[in-house]
Amino acid sequence: MIHTQDLTKTFQLESGPFTALKPSSLRINKGEFIAIMGPSGSGKSTLLQLIGGLDLPTSGSIAVDGVQLESLNEHERTLFRRTKLGFVFQNYQLLPTMTVAENVALSLSANKTPKAEIAARVSQLLAAVNLADKSGQFPSQLSGGQQQRVAIARALAMKPALLLADEPTGNLDRRNGEAVLRLLSQLNKEEGITIVMVTHDRQAAAAADRIVMLQDGEIVDTDWKGGELQ
Ligand SMILES: Nc1ncnc2c1ncn2[C@@H]1O[C@H](COP(=O)(O)OP(=O)(O)OP(=O)(O)O)[C@@H](O)[C@H]1O
Image (tube, rainbow, N blue to C red; front, side, top):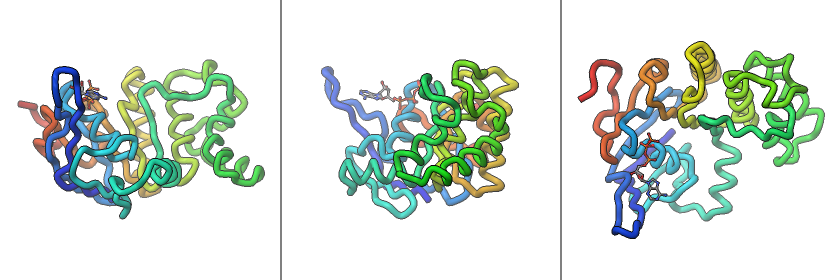
């Protein structure tokens, strides 16, 4: 599903070049649930941005679902993101002036899906995240956990093969965080969606099959699962 080879990312700062991701090779199989962990500034978000085609590597290659991302132009990358990936962020990023149903429908409407099909898919998605009764409400009327479940429903609208989540439980209390993790695990096990989740939280990481550990821009372990960190 994801295969990187000597992938690097260097930022040009006023003080000189800074390598946020050192040459790294990583393989993530279809159907895996991966947590990316590591200290602040270790390159977790940088790696997720490259996997999601939101940024380009400085060197090396990255293939996602058979597509070499470094060889796509910007338009092709946008299309790739829209059709193959779902994104979930720490701060939900729902549109406040749209209802829950309209937020979930966004990518379907952008893709010119027929109205009746959109309505059916939105109902199905909201039922899957246990929010069928909230479709007409606005994001501000929901709890953080409910908003994150709306964001997950929206991310799944186009039936992506891969879901990328950046600290999806970062703003949630324990109970809501657990509900979101249960939902992600269920989507992974029952729908076979590959999930790559950046997290600081060991409890969140415990929901994953495998943990990719980053330190100073380097992948130091790709099968760490529990135990004390160095
Ligand atoms: N656009 C950018 N320009 C310059 N430096 C950047 C840029 N993006 C990230 N960096 C630097 O690269 C390093 C890795 O950042 P990254 O956001 O990937 O870390 P992280 O592990 O996700 O951190 P956190 O857990 O705090 O979110 C940091 O030192 C950061 O300052």
